[in-house]
Length: 238
Ligand SMILES: [Zn+2]
Image (cartoon, rainbow, N blue to C red; front, side, top):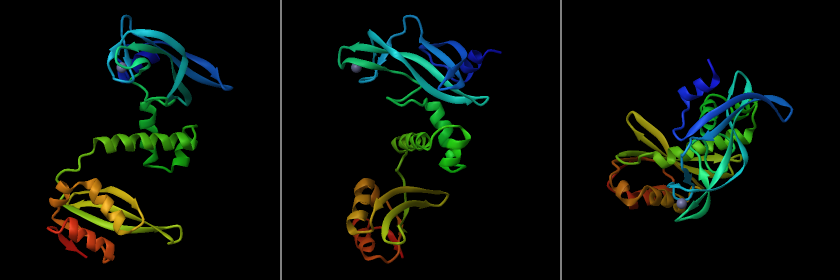
């Protein structure tokens, strides 16, 4: 079976074709290089407005790191096109396997972020022969995605707490959803002041605050005051 066949099975991009897979030398090590080309007559997507647009020119080949295959670092190689978009002008195209200038493919970032839940970021970097920064960016990418797609509706119970760091000299305020069967971290803010907890409620919105039925916190005055003011209808459990 060809590696191309496997790629088409698990990572197919409608407007692109895997042209070739080669074992090559990159920075002194053997790596797998997978050349990707646009499908014939396929229009490039403008990165400004996400609409298909006529081509303008092509840039140098860029490499995008993919999940290692049998221990070989693996890269997609692709010559990015620029489009002449009627709305945005000359823009670089958007490709489905990567985001912006990132040199890791989305798939590889998902892979690294998955392991980063099970091991330390340092261990992930060592295990997969990459850098701590790349693991960090992968987690950041996934968290960003999750934050854009999460739903904050129908939250009935929250818990507000503080955590100390730097030997207890500094505080963070953390707010969790604590509904039965559904607990998650919603928000983190610096300090534990009235301003901090106000900015949580600002983020959470007035409409959602008014739907809260239970709020738990300790007796820290700024919390008690603002919770009473902005979610007064909820039962406040100290
Ligand atoms: Zn555009």
